[in-house]
Image (tube, rainbow, N blue to C red):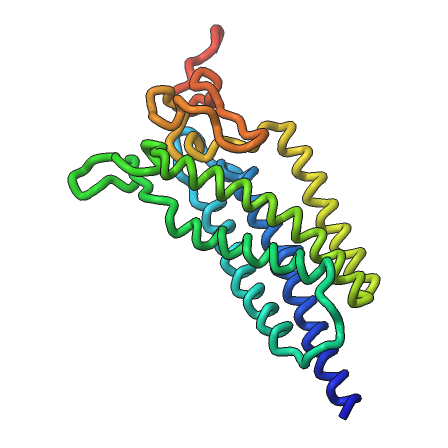
Length: 243
């Protein structure tokens, strides 16, 4: 009986670990990385072409998939046979990450309307929480970004504490270190290239008269492109002397 119980516990723990590592170690960092550095997609003719959905679709797919996996991993650990252990660092960290993950999803439901030329209201008005950067939208962005990065940092500690507690295999440690190290290295490169573009500007362009372009960008290291520095469309480029 004890052998069967130990096998059952081991099965639940091993799959809990694999699923949570995939959710928080792979998908969540990828979703955040894409949302931060690819607001303007590769090959996009910005600002002639605006509101490219590459980053938005990738971010949503990664985060919603991670949420589904997180709930599955949570179910696995809650339905495992009782274990004769007291809650430790991994237990507290894990529940904190779960809570922040749920805050992210629920917060997204209250981000408000979009507005702007791509989603005008029934009366043709461009009014919208995001386009106008209302207090509701600003509160959402501050909460969403701060909670997201906090959850990401806590998830790293949670995963490492879980692998240590479960005596995780070496290949999993090595794979995670290489994956995270690669993302960090690319982040440094893309940050120096100025690719952490303000969401508002990426969606609606650099016109300084737009409501959101009159505010300070929300988020650390996020930059805004001045209108005079925006790329000129090929068809609008003036020939240089001698051409």
